[in-house]
Image 1 (cartoon, helix red, strand yellow):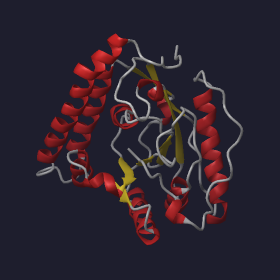
Image 2 (tube, helix red, strand yellow):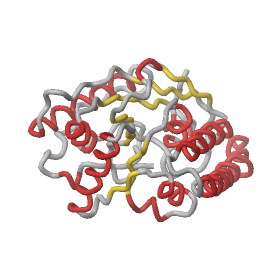
Image 3 (cartoon, helix red, strand yellow):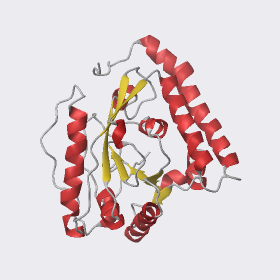
Image 4 (cartoon, one colour):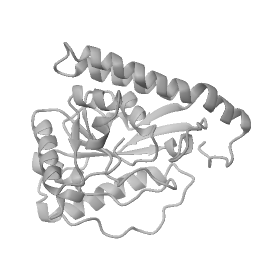
Length: 274
């Protein structure tokens, strides 16, 4: 059963993280990134690179000591959709790559594409960058993601403005709703439970906990217009909040303020998508 993370961690866990887990985590990320780059020389469709990313995700999470359980597997059938999850930790990305059983493209802020290994993999494997600081570039990025969906490839995105500071869900930005309505595809809500306790923001010390990836019923977007983008965004957030707080020791706080207006696509995507 998930419990709050001790503060401070026992010295044994801190030593294990510092001397073993963190070096292996970052070292294997570099190694898998290199392998992904090499495979990109012949893998034009991204299938091999995605398989490498899946192996990376499963391996580094295993090193962290966490065990992952997937709930609602029937909703993770690879249908063309916008897959959306809350964002709690750096370990969210390997969990998503390791446990979604199909190929997809992830939407991430463009600065990440400039990083060694991670950025190189993102570029060469056809992931979708977004520039949240430039309204025109942001709209172009959203259009790129919509084209990816219309070409038959699922898309994944974290809709919050960055990783959570306290384990609670934050306000959702409207990028996923914008993409789903324009592409005419459903949104699949996913709650990540336990990654905050495993590795919260501003730390490199792992704490072994159970992790759950909880997929909810797909939310159809047919019939929604761009004027209803805020309503759809709220519906998606409420679905993820329900899945998350049912399985967390945390109590859901009062409802947040309304999300950004649909007429402001520059604010539509998370600023810290990995």
